[in-house]
Length: 143
Image (cartoon, rainbow, N blue to C red):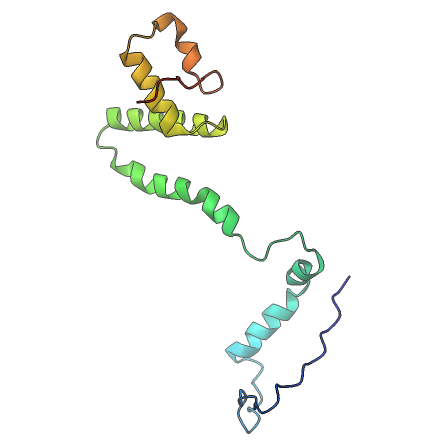
């Protein structure tokens, strides 16, 4: 359902609207000129942009998606500098741990620091499954 056109409002008393357009009309545009090509391009693709106007669920921009994939793009660039094959394997392991924590709604820094502290304090190796993000419970002792 298209939105009704808004009625123009009169200017406030005592104020003049600035002249935004030139006093004389612009010369007609030649059909092969770049502005004419841009107008033809826009007119040929008119229905997709009007969908945003007609359906309020569609967003005007894709900033949400771009923010979501930004770490991937930055990581791809930074991972080139792992230093060695062993460094790349360790980097991949850390990235995997952080992504797994995020997917399980666990704050990665708190989880990793707690798990590393408990392992240092002598947690039995037979109970390492307690440290998996979906099983992890934060320790009561605050450092």
